[in-house]
Image (cartoon, rainbow, N blue to C red; front, side, top):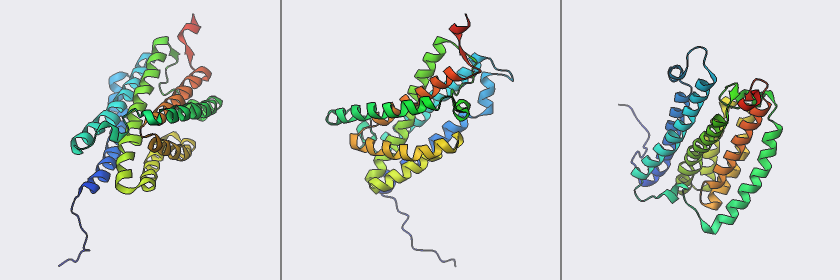
Length: 250
């Protein structure tokens, strides 16, 4: 007979509190990633020589899908599995006690990260990643939809990483193990964007996790991330040699 180690494989609530959020993060980020990069889905939007509109619509779709897949689906599953939990337990609340703290840090970090993003706008690495839609001519409606899609996508993204993944793991493991797991997964999602963004995600992830726990909600992380994405996108669009605004062509 084979001999095995004596390991307790029984489930308890504490196990689920850590297992489910980690599994959902891996599952739904992977779902988003493979859908966003699916050649079959791309083919539904454009042929071999896509137009500006088709290029844009594909990226717009992937961001809205990211909001649903990374934010809505995992949240609904968590609320179903953990029936004693509420939206506030996953960082979706407005805490009056920490409102001034949240506003101060949101404004302060935005003042810090926006100039950094602006100064890097002309760099080839940045122009390679932003804007994600490689349309050459950008209308006003496209720019509005681009801002909206980033807003919704990052809400789902931060709800997953700073809400669903962080708060339950703090309860299960404690603050620092939960933050370490969060940073590891958060940085890993930036690997396709290159070494700079992957390394930068480590200190940023640390700061955002700490501020999220101190404020009790995800809003600092969400709003600062939106400020970074908007700055990266629209400064890159402004400086990109192959892109221009539609009204400038008239």
